[in-house]
Length: 304
Image 1 (cartoon, rainbow, N blue to C red):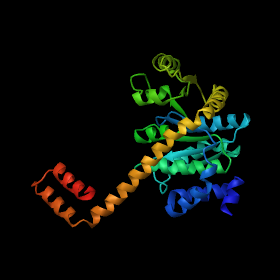
Image 2 (image 1 turned 120 degrees about the horizontal axis):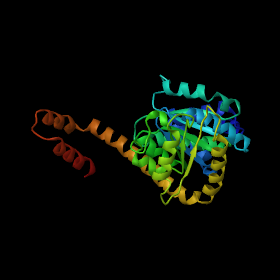
Image 3 (image 1 turned 60 degrees about the horizontal axis):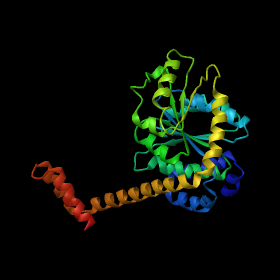
């Protein structure tokens, strides 16, 4: 029943399936086993950038523009807060009402801190949304450290959003951001300093071998959004031709995440049942051993 409703794109079924992915590992495995063969047909667009760059409002307008181009978009927003407080995402949902009204599906994914946890939830939520007929699927994240890297490992197209209001300048743009983007957007381009930032990004990033697309957008003035949507549609066509090649790297990253997480859980269980573990901790506390010695001894015990 769930699969039938999912195939029809019913929102209640999509919400239920993604909740299973996030909260019930055993049921999630069964669900993915049933839908995995049909996966891999949608283009994933990662949208990253600092908080305050205006990503949610931009995604809202862009989703509407993509619908006009005949595309059915879904959005997964990585929530740096928990589902309980719901803080960050509530604001996102408010800013995305226009796109929701036009048939875009929006869902928040909690970041949980385990190895590859963000990726694990997102990858399988993507498979649910693919099964429900969405393409493209946008992933929104706050461009901060590990999550940003994980998003780049999942996305077929990566969009990096800057704006002149957050003190973005070529000095503050992180090296990682200059390497991952297919498209760079200077958002809030109606603000002072936007043209200067645009020229700097063009000079600093545009001259690289990858030759990424650099655009200016303004949600407030509704400027550059249609052009951005058209560029995304063009890039989607290009990326479909090389998707198999990209998919191998994505699967490699996914398998490493799952294996590392399995190992971590196994080690946690072993340490809890190891009588020597508390003894080593006491030796550490009395300064009779240093942390490296203790870790080496425990590791040898585990991997012997």
